[in-house]
Length: 123
Image 1 (tube, one colour):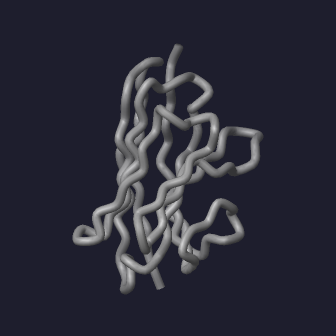
Image 2: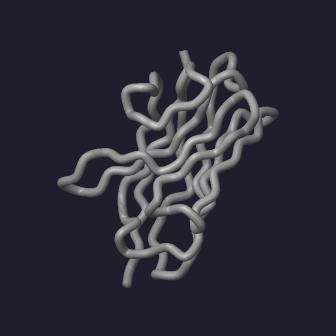
């Protein structure tokens, strides 16, 4: 069992930055791939970024590539999402999730989910 708690969301102006954190409790954090997803009102939840457990390989949605950076600190059982140059279309609830696979880019590859943190970007 893994519990995930996101933090760091908030209101920011376009062009600004936020860093989301996801603290994990439970065993074997270092052997789980971690991902960030987001869901805007009326839309499906979508993949944002993922990081593997084995070699820290990272993957990003095209819409955030070059602006967002995912990283993890296994000693702190925490995964981060640094978001720069935010745009109004980034406004969503952001969720972190963990997968027993080496890496996952789809929702169905993730087993545990956090409750989400709201990110609002004003124009």
